[in-house]
Structures are given as C-alpha cells and as structure tokens.
Image (cartoon, rainbow, N blue to C red; front, top):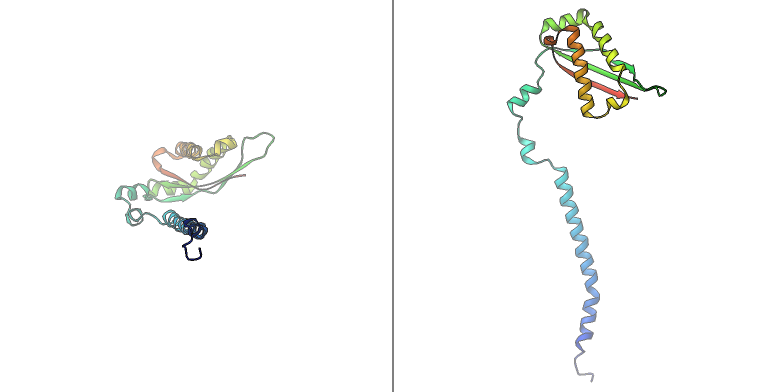
Length: 165
C-alpha cells in the first residue's frame, strides 16, 4: 500500500489550499492597476483640448475691446425683514470708447451708484443664488447703468466680487 500512488483527492487538496492566496493576489493587483488607470484618466487633460488653441471668434468675443472703468464696491442690506443679510458687489464697466470712460470718471459715477444701490437693496437672498440669478443681477445693473449714462456707452459689465453674508 505504501507503493501505491496517493489518491487523486489527496493531491487536489494541497493545490486547492494555495488557490485563494493566488486569487487574492490577482484581485489586489487588478484593483491597484484599475485604480491607477482611473486616477490617470481623471487627472490628465485630454490631449486635443490641452493643445488646441481657442478659435479667433472666441478670442474676439472674450477680449476686452474698450477701456475698463472700476466702480467702488457696493455694500447693501438685502430685503430680508428680521434677518440682516448683506451683499457686497464690485463691478467694472467696459466702455465703448475713451470719451465715454472720461465722462464716467468725471461725474457719472454718482447717478450710477444711486441707481445700482436702489436696485441691489431690493433683492432677497434667493435672488442672489445661482448663475441664472447672477446673470439677472448683471442685466438689471447694466440696464440701470445704461439709463444713467446711455446704453451705447457701455459694452459689458464685469462682476469682480460677489459676497452674500
């Protein structure tokens, strides 16, 4: 009996005992490689987007064409009864030409401040949240500025600081 080969079941048991360790090692290696690939994919910018230059139309649209005049910051109490909330807004105006910029600097800032302060103090906190509401505020301020100094004198309005507290 000692000369007979071991039964097939006895030979399979030692091999089966090592299989979970090998599978665990393969699983860990697979997870590590997958994690590395996901990390590289997420953090690396696409090659075409990173090397492509903006179109000339996009450059022209985003470029500042006229003189830019900064306005003093606006700080107002928002229309929230019983709950004091504040808005700080800093703006810059892109003027259509140098003459418009000079007229703004020489005395048109006071009527603009008056119009914009009245408009901003009528806002509620909900009116200041989100990109769509900021665009409404930009349009409302731009309309009041245009009414004070002429619509053709102002090209664009830039919001450089926007804080609600």
